[in-house]
Length: 186
Image (cartoon, rainbow, N blue to C red; front, side, top):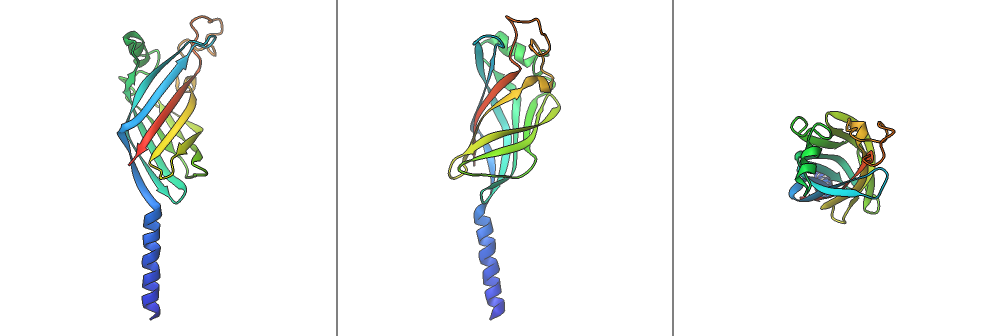
């Protein structure tokens, strides 16, 4: 009798774990990422897009155990063709050489009230830095969103940076750019 109850208890436990553990894939066709760069000394700004190449997440109870996102840097886009070419070139992101940017969570993080502070490794142009920022998730964890700032100079993108070219005023570009995204998790 005790063995039967123990087997039933174990089976219920395994079903419960499976119900609260989800492996999700980032749906690249239903995910969006935009970037915004701005002038360092005036209000001028430009916005364009990037595409997700792939990604996955493992969610268990109210914790994200793993998260990996790969961005297709060749998808870096802007309506101005000359600007797009410049951003893809050697002055900025060198997308022919560095075709991907990645973000990988380095430790599990708790989801509280639909948001979490995540820490992970961001890789741009083969430079890897630890970044921490806030992500938001909807109730069923099918959408992850973020609105973050990244200092491009930490990743070797120093073109017209006021931090490196002190006398530059009119053509200076702010060191930080914004990344805003909605990642659909299936």
